[in-house]
Image (cartoon, rainbow, N blue to C red; front, side, top):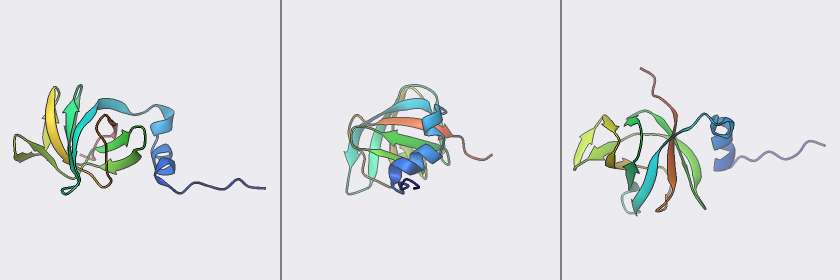
Length: 108
């Protein structure tokens, strides 16, 4: 008998290579704005560009998405470097304290 397959967000994260340890830590969510589907992320290490694929995970959060927009000091930017805080649009709700890891760089 074949075990059932999980088609939820956690399965997507596993299929993206996150389970194999390929993710590189970036930072942590410090505030979420549900009306805008956006959050403030404190970048601790590395750099982030529009188009990079990130893995957001926490106590009740676990999904993978491509970064569609980044704002820094109220201005749209294509690339940011740590340390600092940036605004990022999200496809799903995130929570304060969720970790943000880069899974893949955008295609150049």
